[in-house]
Image 1: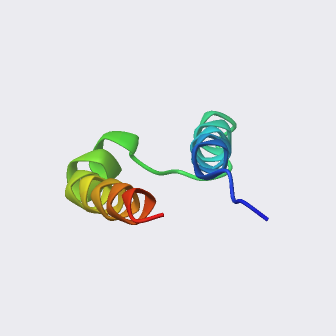
Image 2: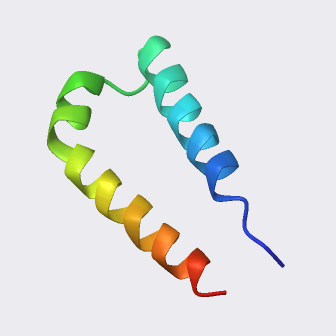
Amino acid sequence: MRINTPAIILIVIGAILLLNNLGLWNVSIAHLVQTWWPAVLIVLGVSMLFRRGK
């Protein structure tokens, strides 16, 4: 079974934005992006590295 990572990422981002818009979860999206963008680049690079090995 192949995991569709981009679809899961879109679902998670959409759920976070929806909860934020409904006021059920108060989180600063800008703060999350400022904090975690390097980790996103690392994860993308590692996933690209493993895909090329197959």
